Length: 103
Image (cartoon, rainbow, N blue to C red; front, side, top):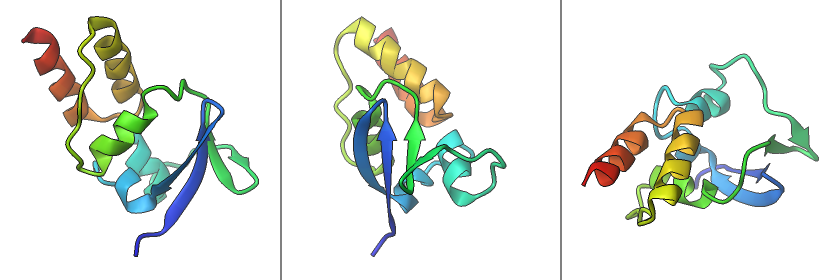
């Protein structure tokens, strides 16, 4: 059983296994949830709050859960997902997106 954390990204509520948020060592998400980053996320009734667009967060969670990831096909969507991956410090996801964009 993995401890679940509840949060809000861009006004949408998510519940994610803490271990999944920490699955890419060195990423901003891992450092926020493993305690190594001194900055704390704002809380709303005990749930973390991230002031980002929620549109691509489900794809980021799928990636972190090691589920098969269906990357968007549109160049605009890939670019926006890449921006979110960069914000969260997900270097491997950024690499996957760059590969797709160059194909």
